[in-house]
Image (cartoon, rainbow, N blue to C red; front, side, top):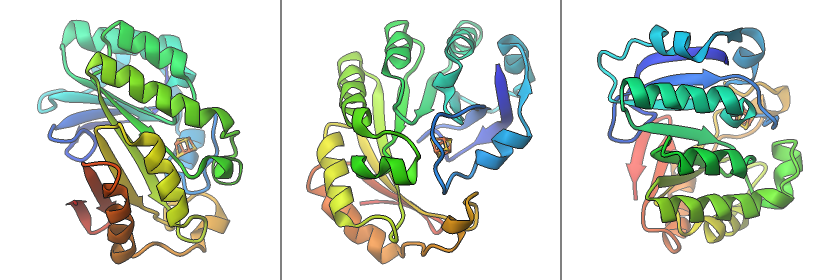
Length: 237
Ligand code: SF4
């Protein structure tokens, strides 16, 4: 299982829980604002999933977050790691994904291996090729399918979008929230240019809190539970 980092204790990655976070390597997208793109390329190491489990200090964690990269790029390792966590610790597991691999997530859900799914919905679907270097045509259907799967399996489903004002506008947010309206939580995240790996993104404008709150208000017309995540903190609208 290729990973590029472990955090033993985080209070921000699994809502209302203290979690340990494992960052799995590899990704099939190439988002210009990705914070993890360079650490993933430079710091990846390969270990047996059980060794990784033993390496995590779970003294204070009451949940596990599997992030990345895109964890579904390593389906066998991902599944094995979830099984180990469930068998050894029986902790809730949150999976962060870009929504590109529905079949793998379906298997995890059918095997009762995840409790929380968080999908990054990057932008309006026709903009995926620009922002994520990925064909967005299937992503819209994948996202809808994943929300349906989670709702029918009692898995908490979060969707979130990192808002980049120079690349998006409120029409993107309207298109996204109409697509994800049945999710349990929608979060608008503040684009952070400093930690973007692509030079072009380091020069783009970050949205203000006022802009995010205005967009959050638009999202609220479709979804009850809307959060803003910014450098200043988290706001529940
Ligand atoms: S999908 Fe996530 S991990 Fe992959 S490049 Fe985009 S932001 Fe980074």
